[in-house]
Length: 185
Image (cartoon, rainbow, N blue to C red; front, side, top):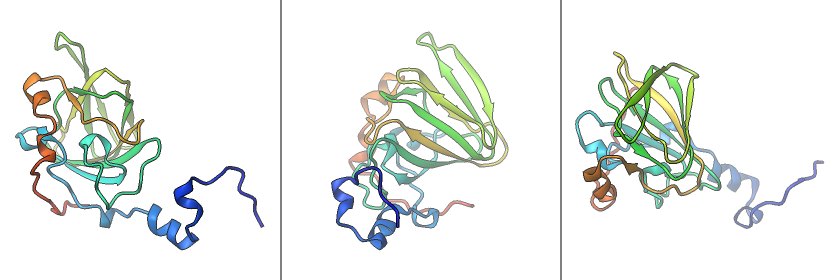
């Protein structure tokens, strides 16, 4: 018989082991591809799908009942076709991209617009510190899947470097169509 060395959070204490597994296991097959997760995803060149696993990430969709509740971080999987990426942006917390399949070109940018790029392949990652302008593009010929983690359970919606996008950064939360488009595995 084992002894728990740390206390359980209140919302877990009264759950059966079966209920713990039901609440905290997330399967890819049950994570719909959300092609409207971000305001810039409506723009050609920035189209991508988010699969939410733990919390909502920086999409701002914190009321998604399909995700595992977040405590201190979020975890999502992004699907990005060739020629697509995301707009330059910042976060108030650390963000990490970890490539699972394919190739992803990532950049950091200064406020003068100068960018430095690196190509990431499978099992490579980049950690973007808070306040550092960054982004990515799939410049390869194949789709890319990568994991995104944020260092907060409820990160703010991304802070686009472009003023017009920043002013509209929450528009996708108002009337976003639901999307259960399947992407290749």
